[in-house]
Image 1 (cartoon, rainbow, N blue to C red):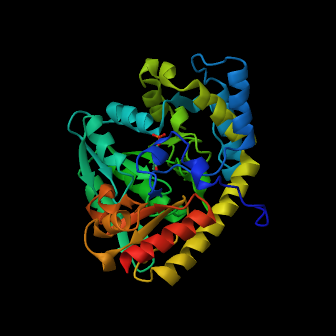
Image 2: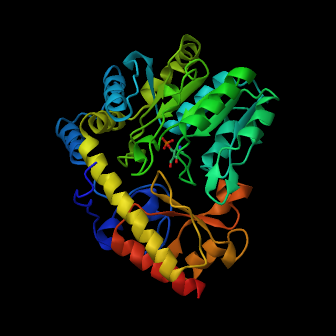
Image 3: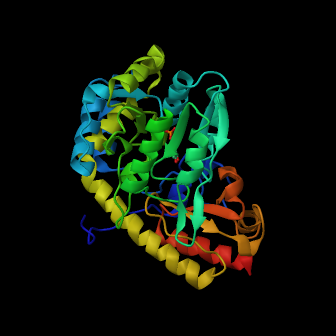
Length: 385
Ligand SMILES: Cc1ncc(COP(=O)(O)O)c(C=O)c1O
């Protein structure tokens, strides 16, 4: 990665406020939204070109993901992660949420248990009951170094024979990149207790300088027990376009993917497929620039927090553009988040949305300009004073 690469530009606030997406429509105009995982950078040129060309062709019909999506993802995974994906093992789905829910419907009988590890991306709490399964929580373990998988807790839960474990790899909101050893231990448990691992790897391309992403299916022995769900939507900011990919690497899991609802292919966004293929094929240089920019924002945020909000602590994330802030010094539950919003007019995600383990935390999205981060932390400091 070229660390001297120019930073990605961000439009001025009044231009950003013209966006019609959720991030920019949820709060009144005097609130700085550092909430939902959308980025403020301009689209990657290859992605914008692909979309513009499609509009020029009036090419807005149904999606045709095969074989382009599998080939593009396989090429990207081989170049970036040395991960050998068979393009034929890639099944397009509407988004990661649809992919996980439909997989869980196939893996779990009604009221079977499915395990998750809070604090975690809030929809995990909804996806399990949506699939008709019963939620079992094994919170992440926390020590002075940060948050990590609680392998002993997972073993105890796996011993009760849940149908599946939904892994967040890397983990939103704590930004943890699970190590090869941790993932190998997880795979060993999954094989012993016959628990299928569904690995949400949407943040895989967003591993920041200093850490290395391990796709679960590259771990020895994982293929027989794991299914991965990936998307270009976080790293290239395409969430509204609706396209993700389920990846398998063994006959048993491929047979599960083969039973995904046949109409899924008609529920994928055509622009999502075009944008994802462009991103995976030609979006590597832009992604490098993004990661270099996010690395600098992470450092900037660390400095601003130290200077202005020393009572707020964090472990800088190894991946994602999300900062998981420990605000316990400012009050229990979501009090700090309410203070930042009510008095500072800065919106963060409330920690309790990520589970009980998220109490007294807030999640801050730093995929924005240095100026907006400067303004937001100044307002948060004034609110906390
Ligand atoms: C871990 C995780 N999974 C899934 C999603 C959403 O993905 P999709 O919009 O493809 O369902 C997000 C969005 O931020 C996420 O952080």
